[in-house]
Length: 536
Ligand code: HEM
Image (spheres, rainbow, N blue to C red):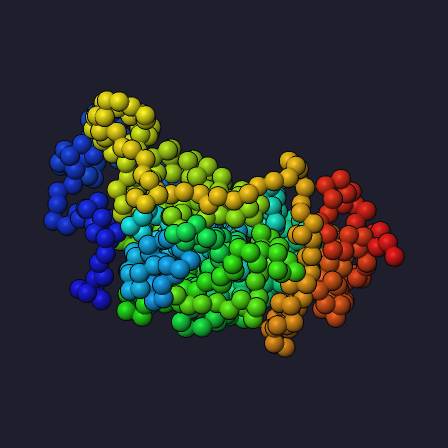
């Protein structure tokens, strides 16, 4: 396949930044040819090494600074280039160019990841998988920062640091919980009924995919598509693998992890090298804005799916991965995804998890990628040229000409001007906002169990058995009996039989909880949740 390399606007742009060392002489970073790369400069045959040795100093200093922080979540990842081709126009629903013209091809880079593990952890962990897609559209970068599960653990971004602290290695000993006690994760989950639906997915076979090319992708949040007339439709985004959805069994996962912790990374790399390009259908569920309140759940609640029986997924495009990165660091590690990178015709909803995400990604990338100019790193560059009055900052690459870097101005001097809507300028959808300023959860977010039950009941008998065994395995590693008890008591709201079977295996009893179907109030004393009976 190497001779028949795919090409597109983004790959051409990247090519301009690439260098080859083939048949070249070794140089310093200042371009000075190096005559001896084996010995440092010494005073006399047996040293000491001289401070003067700028070649040694440069080489070691650069090496000392090679590592950047790993991502605070989704640290372990694998990525590839590809193309998105539109097969059905959505022009009736959105102004977005890349979703309007049938046959249009948009370059993409996709990064798959696990969430909890560090960069060096195994691919086969029981975990959610990230499925982040950067579309290099001619209207700017559009990022669909998706997961392989359609719902999430929490309903509000303010809980995200708590969730991640609970799932990451415990602070005192930094032992990853996959290999040891699971106390903190299950403590948090057992106190967080809103996570029940996601826990069903996480304990299911979906959490141990056979390969990246055999898993689905979901945008999770409800977004909006906006057409030329300003009319909005709610939208849920889906990727459906052409190879179907496949998982491995838990004991297979453990064995593979021992033998080949890079199993998914290797599979993705080799299938692309061998021309077996992974492919997904891209689909949308569309809901007219006037139907916002038609459902028995809130469209803004990220712990809920829109059942496909009620709103079928329309397939509108194909995503194909056809080229491995040339350099893992420069492409897979330096890429910066952000759910806030959108294009005209796509907009956010008021989902409180999404709203928090809109802050978090740039904030973390400012430190991970070293300052405000990481959009200039080759993999992050838009194929649409960038013009604005931002300037300076660490590691600035762009050299803007002219004397003016503010607007309005009467001098001109190279200053870019804002674009009207008809010129492609982004305009947020006008929508009404009302109500008192409150720090509370909407009561429309309160049903934490109906969809968890639906998911559990949709599983086949062997799948249910896997799910049950996963819960037994996980909870048997929880050292604090009260947490096990609280967790099985939560499970009883999904399925009594499941709860009692798990309870029997992990040595606790199912108790009735005080807060069966609501978020735990902020002032609740967790210790009372373990023992108090539910009010009749
Ligand atoms: C990565 C925050 C929820 C999907 C990240 C990163 C942060 C973050 C800080 C690291 C980014 C980087 O270093 O470049 C959050 C917060 C969330 C949240 C605050 C909730 C409030 C979600 C949800 C999804 C998701 C619901 C899926 C729909 C991802 C993916 C990545 C990621 C796929 C990896 C991106 C990559 O491959 O570089 N998230 N996240 N996150 N997040 Fe989230």
